[in-house]
Length: 292
Image (tube, rainbow, N blue to C red; front, side, top):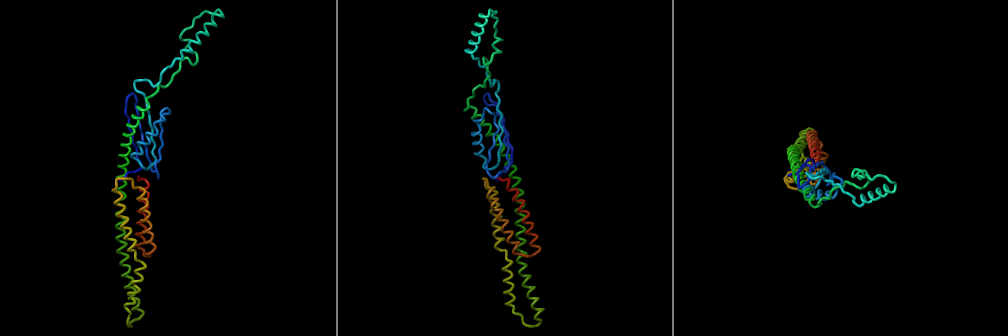
């Protein structure tokens, strides 16, 4: 089934001591383009996320946002530089003794000294984080793909309705083009009768002229190819793989054959039908741009 390149997916899970949320947004693009927004300290997870996405998505601009929070346990810890603290104390006490100042140093004084106490982020188990992010990303991708397929089903309905419209129009063109040749032969015979009055008319000559005209306006080859393209188009819509590029190429062939018919047949009714077909082709082309 076809998939749209537009979609949204989200998943949130608590795994171990990590609360992980992954959001995915997608829009149409000629190729696969990946944009990741992850916490600064978790930059190493980007490649794993990209790998998970590419296993299910082949085209489209995909933006992924990841939020990671610690649960129950803080993600930072206080570190004490004991050696520096000792050095501070020794220096201060020595200075106090030398200056004959009372030694009233307390722990609160140490808190005011630079670099004795520092707050640092706890080291994560990177493999555990990668595994957890991969799991949550996979669930977000499933949600994202499901929405793209839902949108794809709607696109498919619209495309099929327009293909039916084109197919019906091709049938009308075939009928009218055939009728044009018959009408021309009849008009030619009547014209010659008026000119020659009662003289004998070379019926073979009339048939030859009519055949030449019929060949000039014949669109059999074009309509046969159009019907073939219509059949291929329907088949592509049923293939369980990305077909956006193939459909884009095929609709160009639709346009080529339709233009040829329009240039061959100088008939008001057929010209109007050709314009209608081209309108449907353009709408199909626009829809195809959003198909994976």
